Image (cartoon, rainbow, N blue to C red; front, side, top):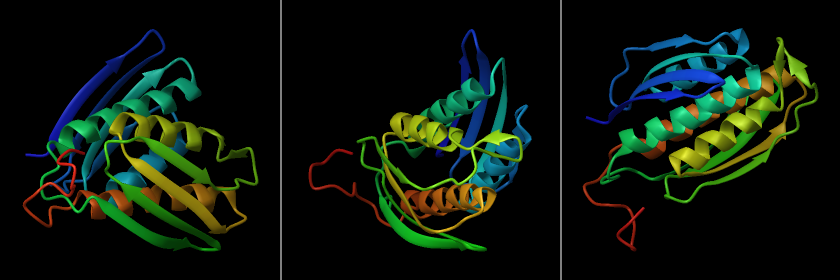
Length: 189
């Protein structure tokens, strides 16, 4: 079973994440940030993963970052020994006027290239710069390489939602079991 349940408690936040890479029972997302809830629901829906996130805290920035950290750690735990996973994925996803190209490698080496221009500093009461903070926390703790490159887009809400949908699709494809061995000539990921 490729599952994980993790609790992260700090002086600033409390985050509980449950992730199941092989079940699609849906998402249960509860943070105090409505737009972030919507983005995490997109992540659960389009990845095909069962995802539960419950988060509270004293500051929006801390909640978003700590959810990224906890979700990254849960993904790393759930993916396990990585035997048989596809490992790589790349695709381009449209959403209305926005078009974003992305690539992922479940490599054991964290790296983020976030090349998206978010025209507005806020959308739906959410600070746009927190998208990069979430992604950086996630990839660092999941130990994956992620590239997100915006091709087109001028609506901040659409661009951000597209980023989360694209991340979901990349995770779904790269985490899929398609073989029996470790996809690495080094013997480690």
